[in-house]
Image (tube, rainbow, N blue to C red):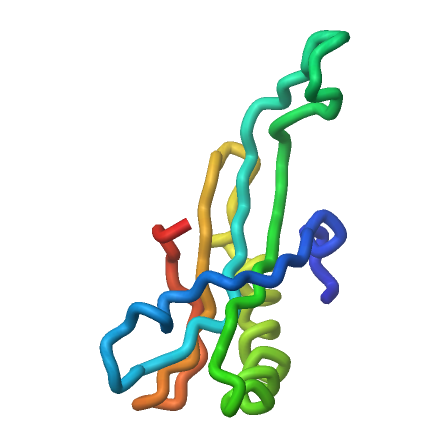
Length: 124
């Protein structure tokens, strides 16, 4: 992807999506969610069940479910428009800094306007 954050990202596939609770007709599809957290590192005491350090800087990309009949179209929107916009955000001034604790953004395809846009996501 060409950004320093990419090597630190985990990829998840979600089974939770706002489209399952949205009123019909659906006005758009959430396609991706990116989450950034940066909490102080906690080293567990020797002998505890949790042996791995907790906290630190973490990035995650979550692929959100879409209707099966729209899968190919949405996949193309992600590749052609969503990921380039994500790269631009990660390279720009709005990218989270180490001082920030947590943020999340979601990438939506808006049906009415044919736009792909990243918005702040407070549902995470």
